[in-house]
Amino acid sequence: MSAPPPLGLIAELTHRCPLQCPYCSNPLALDPAGRELTTDTWRRVLDEAAAIGVLQMHFTGGEPMARRDHVDLVRHAASHQMYTNLITSGITLDDRAMAALMDAGIDHIQLSFQDIDPAENDLVGAYSGAFARKAAAAARIREAGLPLTLNFVIQRRNAGRVPQMLAFAEAEGAARVEIAHVQYYGWGLRNRAALLPTRAQLEETTRVVEQARARLRGRMVIDYVVPDYHAARPKSCMGGWAQRFINISPAGKALPCHAAETLPGFDFPSVTTHSLAEIWESEAFRRYRGTDWMPEPCQSCDRRELDWGGCRCQAFAIAGEAGVTDPACELSPHHHLMAEAAEESLVEAPSFVYRRMGGALVGV
Amino acid sequence: MIPRLAPGMKLRFDQVRNAWVVLGPERMFVPDEHALEVLRLIDGSRSVTDIATELATRFNAPAEAIEADIHPMLTDLAARGAVRL
Image (cartoon, rainbow over all chains, first blue to last red):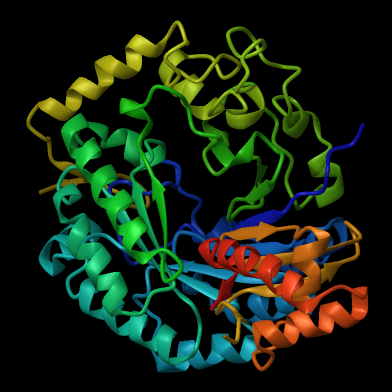
């Protein structure tokens, strides 16, 4: 039986980025510019995506605007009636870039912030003046008439400032704000000891978000993403392995999620040699799709079609095996490993290892 | 009260799924047939009462009863970020 068509395609246009956030979800081994797909290949991928039923295109990176052809690709996706979403740092979103995106038919822009405190924001991204550029970008997006989504990435240093972040989003007229705790993959996992919040911090951010949700209901949507390390049950990662999304890396690897390249024993297909239809039915995509692959305690769990066994990449990163229950689940025999790692939040934070092409640099 | 699709929300027919879908920032859903009838009449000028009247004619049902049904539906769609009331 073939799977229902994918809902979304995540196009990581490039790993290049003006920022160097130490929790970047990109892999530690970044794709260099020379390995990026050509514009023509991306256009073909967009044609194939529309044909197999992809409804939403997420252009991301790295910084997707670092690719000169990002406007052309948005236009191409819009011509297929796909919903176009740009996930950006906003650093280069000046008046000209904004006008070009509007002309191309962009539907939505998600603007990331590292903090509400400008100095801390700029320190996390290792880019002086970043906050001011982001604030200007937020105003441009709103003035262009697009719904504004702000994304705040939460970690130990800024968890106490969630109320100010929400107030800023409200004042900026955001339709939606994401209060998203760092997810511990890629650079985030590398810097976990410096980033992981304490349980008390997590509980406080949850309380603040729930209060704001009740107050702002119907006016501003708040999406809240928690870290797995203090959880009792895992997240429904990507809505289940290869059930909703295809992620394409800058060099063209097709993955069920952006972190899947970390998993050994896979031969992920490339869009340079396979069609998206073939990719969606490939062995790599079928391997953990649905529930047949599940071991216990997932197989007999009444939540198996709610959380789909959690995250394969986390199972591998923590338990050493991709095909076991996500250790975030308290029913996992490996759950104690998460609890032990969570104790890192109680020790003094080490310096950030900043995300850099061709090697990491230690700072702050 | 004049409902509108919220900024960034789109209603379109998808030929692959043979279904109407609501698309928005990081969200999408397939509206049920009742919600779809209402969503297709939201144009930024019709009021809730106009929509109820239109549906009453189409389905030969009392407008007051339809309007009473539409209100909680719109409240739910607003909470999901799909419409603005």
